[in-house]
Image (tube, rainbow, N blue to C red):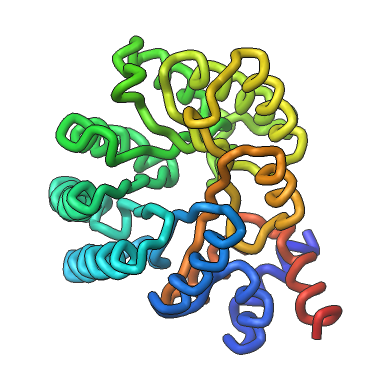
Length: 303
């Protein structure tokens, strides 16, 4: 309750104060900031995926703006030779306003990425978006195989049935490409698992299915327990190192990240940047009030 109360107050504090916390988890406001942060991660043997901050929009002109930002960012990152790809949120491209316009916007982004030999990850959002985002992914995968992927959330009841419904249609040459995470949105118990260990168990179940059914998987977690379970599954099924990667958020658990890299596994870090950093930070705070502990530490312990 205290966490929720503080989380409700923090968005009304001065931006400069919130930036003291946020800057550890966001590369900055500009493309140059993101390129600099990504280059440093590349030097550490870590790949990146770039996310331009900004999610729910109110008109399609904002969707066009999102598309143009991504097209420019892809050109600039690939010109600099950054080892990374790009993540997109369909709501930023108009999903909840006009799904077909959203599809066409994202298609332009994927087309450019494919021309540059790169890759686009479609983020999964709350439950109202799931079916539409699956549809966008399948349509784009058919046209641009090897250049588009999707995020799946282990806490949703539907995730395993969705995987099984693919019916082995992926191949070693053209696999489905998924990022598997626990899930962050608040969903009703009718469609989402609620227990902490229960979600972990389904994450492991989903992961094993992916690793054994010609699917490339980004194992997205900061949970040491799940990382150790992933190691066990990789060894159990003798999974080649080029068939999976681990993924983490920028600025989160750097020592754990380093240990995974030192063990010889591929690692990719999700690097967010953009002028909407304040909205991103406060939205994430509402979704996860326990982050208040980190904010208090950043403000009063680190200065």
